[in-house]
Amino acid sequence: MPGGVLPYQTSYIDSDLLRFMSQFDFRIGTLECAIGNGLPYDEVKLRGRMNIIYARNEDLFRIKEMGFDVVSLANNHVWDMGEDGLRNTMRQLDELGIQYCGAGMNIEEASRPAVVKRDGVTVAFLAYCMYNNPWLGYVETADRGKAGVCPLDIDRVVEDIREAKRNYDKVIVLPHWGKENSYKPMSETIDMAKRMIKSGADAIMGSHSHQVQPLVRLHGVPVCFSMGNFLFPDFYMQPPRPMWYPDAMTDLTGIPNVEHYDFPVKEYVKRVWEPVSRYGRAVGLTIGERGMTVDSYFTHTSLQNIVSRSSISSDMKRHLWKESGNAKYGLFRRLTSGILRVKKHLVRGGR
Image 1 (cartoon, helix red, strand yellow):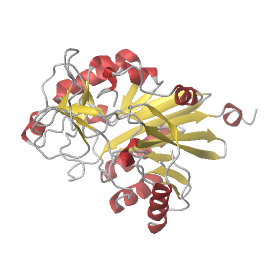
Image 2 (image 1 turned 60 degrees about the vertical axis):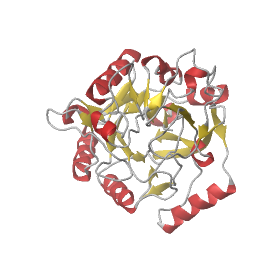
Image 3 (image 1 turned 90 degrees about the vertical axis):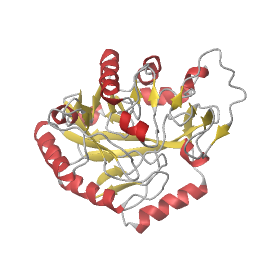
């Protein structure tokens, strides 16, 4: 999420992390917000809890600056400014040369994979958003002749994966699913991950919980149930709840900071993430002749809203070990927002 408080500070990402990301052939993540200036908020959300998350057009450059090549739009906030907001988001990404998947003006567009190619290897990314679920709230799903996000209907996902496997070398699924603020994957997401793998998925990199969840191998396939928050800064809110971008003349020194709040919000506030939600992962996937290897790294967003590489607390490590073991996913690996590297000497027949 490239907006929030970031326009009111001079930096947002550590230079060492940027250099680290530049070592990979491709960088992939979830863009969990709508992009737009002065567009009306979605009417359904305005009638509900008004959790409007968006960044302005001028904020999107940060995604390009970090080098992201592909973003998933399959999430519960890309529609926060309705169809106009989704159209604008896609237009802005097109202008920056960033591919996207997981949303569109109809189901055909929304289910179309984003494809990257390097050294003769093609990798397709498919993205889906869970819906009709209390942990995600309102989600506008695409259909024939209807714009929205690509719905996480597992039967359709299975067919999409099989079709993609017929056309591309590797297929990576980017699901937006599960329960917020939890280390534990839902049993439903575990079952869906197994069906995706059985259908041919080569990796599954999840999002939504705003908290890291286990990274494991299921039947030899890397699955990250949630990568936490990579770049999701604190943000200002205006009554009754939507995000707020104060102008340059606004004195922000007296704005109260809140981690938790009642709805509706009764005053202008700065919403700050609780400590556990300031961690994220960067999952490094390396494609070679013998399969896909995984390296994983933690990131942390400081109280100054600057993201850098980091380590984790013993408490967090213990929680993640527990959730990995309880569900019998396999061995827990070190943690890591979606980075992909293709090793030339492996994909070129060992040269």
